[in-house]
Image: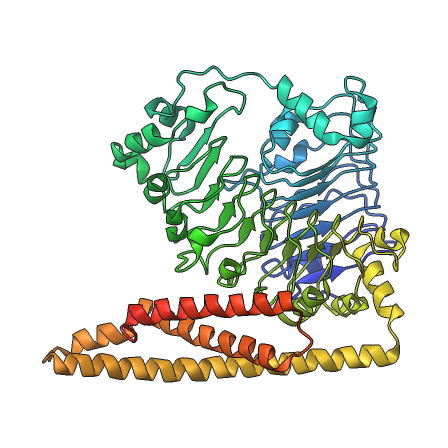
Length: 568
C-alpha cells in the first residue's frame, strides 16, 4: 500500500527499530519536508536526500550508518553522532552552484580517522562542529580558517601533535595552531587594487567578490578598500556581474560606496573584521538573502533603521560574536521572512517583549549571553513562531527554566540547548537529553490545572493577536483612504487634469508600504501606552524601556508621514 503525504513538514520516528527510512513516503513530500528525526534506530543504509530542497534539520544519531548521508545544500543541522562513519568526502558528492548552508555538524562517536580539508573548507557557514570521540590523529589546517566556527569539540581523539589539555578543554587553542599551519599567501600589495579583482573574482554570469586581509600584517591599520572601489567604478562591466556574494574579512571599516556598487548581491559576509559601525548603504540591497556581520565590535544596527530594502527577502542574519547589550528590535521587527537568527556570544541581558519574532523563524541562537529570564520568549515562540525547530540558550544566566516550554512539544522544535546555566530546578542530566525528552519532562512537571491555564492564556493571546491584526488592517484602510483623498485634493487644487498621474500617485508601491508602516506604528504605540497605563507592577527600568520603544515608534511614524506629505 503506497502512502502519500504531500504536506508533511516534520517526520519523527526516533527510538524505534527501523533498519531503513521510508523513503517512498518522504519522497511524496519532497517540496515541503523540513525536519527528519530518525535517531535511536538501526539504520545502516546509505541515504540520498539531495532532492529534498526544503530540508533544514536531519537527526540520524545513534544508528548503524557507515557512510555519511547525501544532503541538500539547504540543510542547516546534521546530527550523525554515534554511528560508524569513516569519512566525510561524500558530503560534497553532488555539485551545487550555491554554497552549503550547513550551520551545525555533529560527528562525535564515529570511526573517523581523518577530516578531508578540501571538503570541510567548503562549509564556510559552519558554526558548530563536534568531531569528538573519533580516531583522528591529525587535523587539516582548513578547520582553523572556517570564518564562522564558534563551537568546536575535538576531545577524545588521539591527536598527538597537539597539547592534550588543549584538545580536551581548549579547542580554540587547537584552531589557533591550525591557522598557524596554513600556507602563507604571497602578498603583491598592501592595498586591494585591480590585481585583487583578477585574483578573487571568478568568471561567469554570476561573480563572487572575496577580499581577505591577514590580521597579522604589520600595516593592517592603514589598509584601505578605496583602491578597490575605484577599480570597480572604472570597470562597470565587472561590477555589474557581482550578484552572488561579497566577502570582506580583516578590515577596520567598509566604504559605503563599495556596498552601493555591489548592491545586487544575495550574500554579504563581512565577518571577522573590527567594525564598530556599518555603512547605511547596507540597507539598500534589494536581493539580500544572507547577511553575516559576526565577529565584529558592533553594539547596535542604527544605520539600518528605516527603509530596509531586504526586509522581505532576508533569510539568515548572523550577529554572533559582537557587543550587543540589547536585541536590535528596531531592525528585527521588520524582517518578515527571517529563518535563522544568530546572536551568540554577545552581552544581551533581556528578552522581554519578544513581539519582534517573525512567524518564519526556524533557528534561534542565543547562547553565551547574559540572559536571566526566558519566560517572555517562551510565550512568544508558542504564539508567533510555529516553524521554530532549533532553540539554544546555553551558557547564559538563567535562574529559572519555565515549565511552559512543554507547550512547544506540540510544535516542530527538534533541538533545544539550555545547558550550563546557573538554574538549579532542573537536573543537568535532563538538559543533556534529546529535545522531545526535555519538552516532555517540562510538560509532565506541570499540574493538570497549570496545563489548562497555560492553554487558556495561549488562546487569549492568540485572540489578542488576531484582534491586533484586524485593528491594524482597519487603521491601514482609514490611513490609506485619508491619504488618497489628500492626494486627489492636492491634484485638483493644482489643476492637474491627468487622471493617470493621480492613479500613479495613489497606487505607488512605496506609498503603500509607508501607509502600512504608519498603521503598524500606531498599533504598537497604542499597545505600549496601554501597558504603561494599566500595568502597575512594571519596574522603573522596564517602564523606561517601554517609553523608549514608544518614542522610537513615534519617530518612525512621523518619518513616514512626512514622506507622504501628511505632516510638515
